[in-house]
Image (cartoon, rainbow, N blue to C red):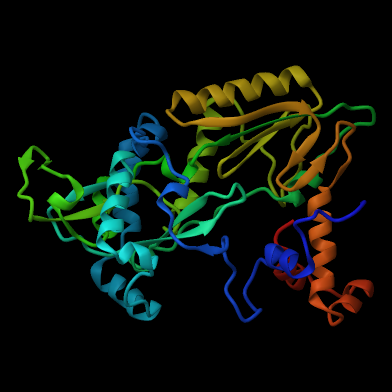
Length: 375
């Protein structure tokens, strides 16, 4: 394994691997970071999110209407959930409570069409805070805990892990081709249905403070109060992951990447001449037939781009790293060096108490999942 990566130590590796509560602290998405407007990772000005109905195809508007009807709770059920959640107000980065900073931030969001405005007060409040990204940029997170209380619980979203990848069966002598691409700013791609935006309202502002002179063809007074509303499906809404994943899978199927050839956990492995999976914003096509893999990959990326989504970090190579694992060109499946060191250092960071369980083979799946996350 060589020496551990220079940016890893036992406690840090353990924090990165933890996947469940039970440690006396919540599992973070990333380290909480102070707001810096120049460091926010978001689409450039002029970016226009893609309408959900168009991504769902010919009957897309019907699906959107059905979603709003079926998943939005009646007021009485929402009230019960709000009382049970115990959140009186969403958490906001303290800097965004300062008028000048908040107004500048709203202008930036509006320029990228991530928010719109309404003269109505909104039905529920959200707020923003930031966490770190590996790139050094900041990821915006929406505190939508109160908004989530207005919706039914989301459907289960099945994501491929090392379990599904490790079950692939190649023949001796096969040469594995791996093609991958990412969707840029995946959670900003999807437009929030207009019927739901009042449930994702930010603190109202005066129109003049954010440079708004007209709204829906009507002239605004400088001191008129208007309400910013989230206009995209963003991280923090409980349905965001399910919608993002289901649309990605649907577009892949339109490109000819069939359900039968999709890699799934706890399912029989597909034919490994050419198979695929989608992991939120990651497209993965893998197989022993290079021409088939490359053709399927091109069809999928072309379909994503034709739908209006931004694809980047496109790679096609013999073997490589995939979802934190390594699949070599000769079909050896193993943890990536970084992942292996995280596990090793995380165990060291736990201290002595759990180590004999692993040595004796007594560590149950729940404990392993809690420590290391899904494989």
